[in-house]
Length: 346
Image (cartoon, rainbow, N blue to C red; front, top):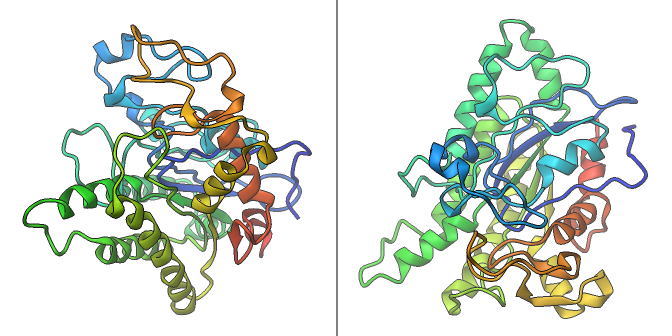
């Protein structure tokens, strides 16, 4: 049985898109590679230019926020999940490592996060790492670790790890742009995206992953957003509906694969409907209005009352609520089990 701190919280962002692996076993956390894609942008800060790194970010709860070309969201699962599971600190970004990760006491893994990354490669500016790239980096990490650890050790570690994947929003924006063109591409749609998602999960399974926590896509038509139409409303629903049979099918065909799907879309809707029931006051405006950058309006002084930090991303308080719900919650927002139950399965 894993050890869970009494007041643990695992913060997840609405735009946290990607891959995370965390391990818990015995009376203390076991070592595991930890990866996370789009969201907190752990690796994106290493793609910033020297000029961008020197720009001051937004004050308040995101003091180290980079400019739009190098997004680093408020503290998210990379910060809180490992600590909630008993690790002393969140894992370092992959791009910050000079040497192969070592499986030692207190090892919490490796962070592959990359802001605005997606399942597909639809940006060529080098400022993010799509999920396929992150899997390659993960593979490279495992190959380097084989120099000091047996394959049996690595296989056991991976089988005890939780691969937390939350990806798709950036891809859906991309699909929306393609489908609203005069001559849309009939291969750039949700079914093809789901198929690509399945290929990546299968690749991770072949590398040793067995436990998958999948966070679906929240609404793209946020009250503080700039664009909303029928297609933008339907795309997240179609994507989320596609995840369920995808994971069920993979679990049936791949021996030992287990999963939990966290319904971030439903949680967001529930909070928007009755914000006071969840401890929020404002779910229709953002704490940080306009670009979260110098020379614009300062963020609000009470961010804990807001659901949205900016036009796309939740506040830290919102992220903590989502994390706690997915970690320990009921089948209302996680199915067929919550993340804690999944992690503790042998």
